[in-house]
Image (cartoon, rainbow, N blue to C red; front, side, top):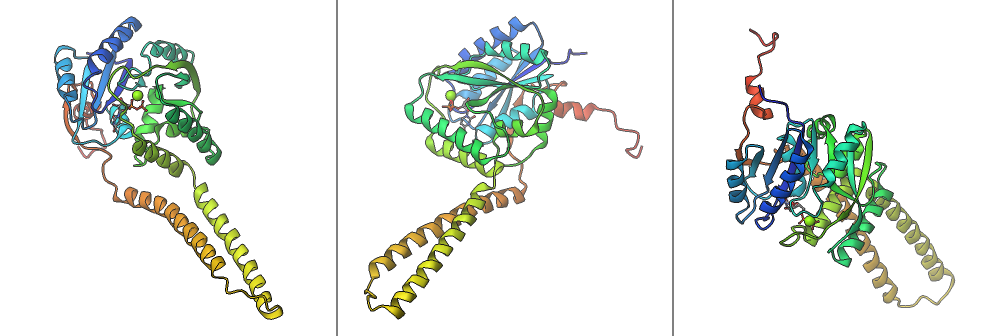
Amino acid sequence: MKEPIFLSVVVPMYNEEEVIEVTYNRLRTVLQSLGETYEIVFVNDGSRDRTAAIVREICARDRTVKLVDFSRNFGHQIAVTAGMDHSSGRTVVLIDADLQDPPEIILDMVAKWREGYDVVYGKRMERKGETWFKKTTAAMFYRLLRSMTSVNIPVDTGDFRLMDRKVRDALTQMRERSRFIRGMVSWSGFKQASVEYVREERFAGETKYPLRKMLRLSLDAITSFSTKPLKIAGILGFLLSAGGFIYLIVVLCQHFFTDTTTPGWTSLIAISLLFNGITLSLLGVLGEYIGRIYEETKGRPLYLVSDKVNFTSEARDDRKLTEPVGAGAGS
Ligand code: UDP
Ligand code: MG
């Protein structure tokens, strides 16, 4: 009988061939020093480089390393979800592949977990080697998100965190498509604590989060935790139509009681531009929500796996097959 796994480490990877070996070695050193059973679940998010091949090599010589290989790129948050789905530890750690989150912090997280916390998230005290633009937009985003949502999402945290099994189970039950895992963890409640750390520079390669993906994540975060934009849209619409109505009265009065009615197409154009712009952007807000409703109603699986390596009897999927059939199952 195999010992149950104490710690699962989930590492999402998208074109990370330059960092995997080093990340694996550092993770292994840290995890071995912990003196507990562990597994490392690498999720290959449709990389176009040698990422999967390198992980396969590692898997062949180290059975504690597992690979979930996606059929294509599904995005970071989905890759992390797949890693959690496939992890069987008493605790689960999410960490980036690029060593920006130092693996050594995992030891502090485990210590906090032992004190009785269910979620221990890493709080970034300083971010090295990231552009001024990324830092300011990130800071603005976390604050905007806080002001928009009723869920208490801690500022300046990423997905680097340790979770108890029960939190992981709660999260794997949430199959929504627009995923903002930090928010979902906060939403789930449980006893949370933080450990502070300095976010290092990316070890090698460049960011896999271009502005486009960052914007998408921010939109997912706001739309899945807040309907405030819809309310703001409504209030704005109301204020504008009230303003428009007042202006209409002014114009009518001018027409009937004075003879200063100017040809005035300037004001007309100005108003029509302004109102059209606002109407269109409000429609855009609606569209963001409706698009997400549409995506959810399709009910597709969150990701497709093309291959799995090193998942043996202790893996969840396989365990299901070997579990005895319950008494009520018609036998
Ligand atoms: N990542 C992924 N799929 C993607 C983009 C990124 O799995 O589509 C992974 C990436 O390999 C890394 C983590 O997500 O392990 C964080 O990405 P990155 O370090 O590029 O983001 P940044 O730290 O610059 O925000
Ligand atoms: Mg990074």
